[in-house]
Each structure stands twice: as C-alpha cells, then as structure tokens.
Image (cartoon, rainbow over all chains, first blue to last red; front, side, top):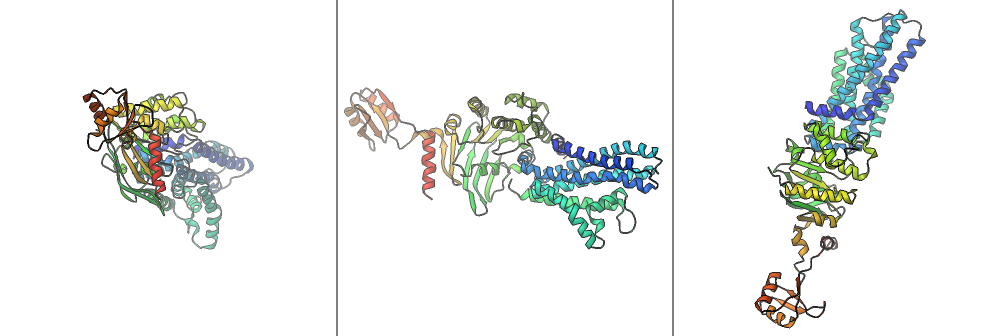
Amino acid sequence: MTRLVGAELLKLRTTRTFWAVSGSALGLVLLIVVLTVAIEDAFGAEHDVIDLLATVGLCGLLTLVLGAVVGAGEYRHGTIATMLLVTPQRLRAVAAQVVACALGGFAIGLVIAAITAAIALPWLAAKDAAIPDAGELVQVFAGSAVYAGFAAALGVGLGALLRNQVAAVVIVFVQILVVEPTLAALIDGYAPFTLTGLGAAMTGVEEGSGVFAPGTAVLVFALYAALFAVLAATRTARRDI
Amino acid sequence: MPVVLEVRDLTKRFGPNLAVDGLSFKATPGRVLGFLGPNGAGKTTTLRTLLGLTLPTSGTAMVDSRPYRELEEPVKVVGAVLEGPQFHPGRTGRNHLRVMAAAAGLPAGRVGEMLRLVELNGAGDRRVKGYSLGMRQRLSLAGALLGDPRALVLDEPANGLDPQGIRWLRDFLRAQAAGGRTVLVSSHVLAEMAQTVDEVVVISRGRLVAQGSLDELTEGAEAPIWVRSPEPDRLRAALVATDNVRAERGEAGAGWLAVRGASLEDVGTTAAENGIPVFELYRPRQSLESVFLELTGATEAGR
C-alpha cells in the first residue's frame, strides 16, 4: 500500500494541476492576509489574529477542487485503465489515491500555513497585535492543514463517483457557496455539520455551544471523506472501465 | 513460466447490446495470435475483459489460469497496449512510466531502458500532449514492456506507427514469441497481421467465425491444385484413377489441369510414378484479407 501511495503522490506532483492549485491557494490566502494586515491598524484581541490566520483554511476549498479534478481526471484522460492494469485490486487502487490526495492536501495546507506564519506573525508583532500563544497557533495552522487534507480526500471520492471533472467542480462550488449556507440558514443545528463549519471548528475559529470540538470536527470530516471514498471504491470495483 | 491467455464461453452484454457472444479461444506461449474482426465485432471488449477492465456477463477470461484481478504482480505477467486515451496530456512520457514503475515496484532504471527500446529517449521529458499518435503508441508499448512480462495483449498496436515503426513492431512481436512469450494482438491492418501472426481468431458480431493457423485459413482447402504438364491427358487419366480425385482441363491455358480431392504430394507422386513431366504445381493461397472478408461478410449476411 505504501508503494501505491508513493506512486499516486508521484502522479499528483507530475502534473501542472497540483502546482496550479497549490499556487492559487497560496496566492489567495496571502492576498487576503497581506491586504488585511496592511489595511487594518489594530488587532486588539487575540481572536482577531486567529480569525485572520484561519484564512489558511481557505486552501481546503481548493484542495477539495483538486481532489475532484484528480478523481474525475482518471476517467477523463483514460489513466484509470493504466492504474488498474498495474493495480487490478480496485479497492486498493482507489484507497491509495484517496490517501495520496489527503497527504497532498495536507502538505499544501502545511506549506501555506508555514509561509503565512512566516509573513504574517512578524508583521503583526510589529503592529503590536495580540499574538495568540503557541498552542492556539498550532491549532489554527494544523487544523487548516488537516482540513485541507480531508477536503482533498473527499474531493477524490466525489470525482471518482461522478467521473466528470466539470460536474464535480461545479458541485463542489454549489455545495460550499449555495447549498451549505442555505441549509444552515433553514435548519437549526445544521451549520456545524457543513464542510465550512467543520473547517472552522478544526481551526478553533468557532468555539462554544453548538460547535464541534476540533477533534470531533476532524472525526466527522473523516467520516464524510471515508463515506465518499467507500462509495467511489465500491462503484469503481463494479464498473466497466 | 509460460503464460496462457484463455477466453472460455465469454459473453458480455452492455444493456441491450450483446458485445461478445459465447467466445472461446486460447493464446499459447511461443506463438503470435492475431485477433481479427470488423469494427464493433467485440475485439476491444474481449481484450479489456481479459485484462480485468471489463467484467464478463458470463464465462471466463483467464491469464495464467486466473482472472487478471487475482494476479499479484500483473505487469510482470501481462503487458498491455489498449486502444484509446490512457495518458495525462500534461505529464511527460518519462513521468508516465515512472508512475507505473513506482506502482508496480519496478526499479526506476527500467523507465530509461524502455524509452530507449521504443526510441523515445529524446522525447521522454516532453509532455504527452505534444506527442504524435505514433509516439503515444510507442509510449504505450514501453509501458506494456516495463515489467518484462511473459505475455503481451496488444489492441491495435500498429495504429499511428509509420512504416519503420510497423516493421519494428513486427520484428519485435516475432522476437517476443520466439523467446517463448505469449502474444495476442488485434489489428485491422490485415496485410501487416499476415506477416506477423502464427494463428488467427476471427470474430464478427461477438461470435467466433474462424480459428486456426494462418496457413490453414489462407490455404483455401476448397481451391483446386493447379498443375501444368506437357502430357495433361495422361496425367489426368493417372490422377482420376484414384477414388474421389477429379481433374479437369483448366481455363489457364494449354497443359493446365485443375485437380480436386488430392494433395500437392499426391499429384507430384502420381506424376513421378507414371513418368509424366510436370512444369508447375501449386495450390493458390487466399490472402488473409480475402479470407477475412469472406468470413466476416458471411456472418454479417447471415443476420
């Protein structure tokens, strides 16, 4: 399995898609963080700084898209056949891809978190902002990276299920930008179960009653990702390629 | 260990469409088996089923006595070239092979070897979207050979190859078979197949219509033997003295006889025993193309 995951990671980083999504995620996060730090004069409360740094979690949306593109791309480009000729045990093949994308997403999250920290923290300190303690910083950055990892895994499952890149990406955006906010507004207690709600809980941005603890949020998101992975693997196992 | 590829009573249905209908054949080591059929005959479906990509409706498709999915190291058992897209256009040829090698646990050095073998070493670091059809086909072949497999399943491997490439492929397949490997190859380039294969399986509309060695199929058992002699009447009398042998004056010209019911050896021996000179003696061969058209045409017409 390690061998297969290694091959999938190689597959991931030998296309421009991975680097384009990583670059876009980094650019988006840095743009927001840099503009905010530059424009805002005061960051009085630690919570303001945490909210700002949690922007890193935005990369989860892009790793979700990356996963969907990768999962559906196997069918678009016909590379699923090559993949299954080398690894005819389809459940293993899909599992390896899900794990590799999760690791890839996690790595993207970590790198963006590190770059953001390196740029924002000294700048914020120079502006006399209330810098949170190390534990809170680790939670916001690690939570964002874990969120990005699971989002990528979920995306792969979705993409492999749908087999159509455009449909998969459109569904991702519609889910995040339309379905989740609408359902959260209509159904009491639904907000913590949304992908964005879980992301916020993982990074510790949202706390208090009605919000999952970070560990619970990780577990719920992992269940979502596992559900899609199992559906994709089962469907792939029964499908003619 | 040699590998046998075997399809037994294979049926594959896509919804209401019957793609393969009770097909059985076997590809054996040391031989190149040509898999022929018109477009839509079920060749690709059969090969993809053999490779575990398509699931049979009924029957079996076995590689080394097992379904492909149960092979532990499939790339070391069977190398496959499939029809249709199978590369990410943005990945380089070398990286495509590197991914395959990594997944199969093969040494990275095999990648360079295979690129050199298919003469793509100069283009290995270019993205596949810049490859010609022939280059993609060569890359596909490199992937098939990566694990040094004991059998090859090739679906239209000559597609897009230039004449030198086709020649290379022919020599390569012959060498593979001579080395004891099992080679199953589908193609619609019949003239090329005639120079490459030892045996042929012909299918039409998913059904087997003919199977046998190339010689058997092209020999034309129904065609007469032609013999030219300065004493055609004496020869004719000597030949028809044997039961079931018929000999008639041919339309080809004076001295020619068309002989049915006897082998070339029978005619030659009879002539020698009776002291009758023979100037020419042969059984005309049909081309693989005419055999193919005859066989598949008959099936189409029978529907």
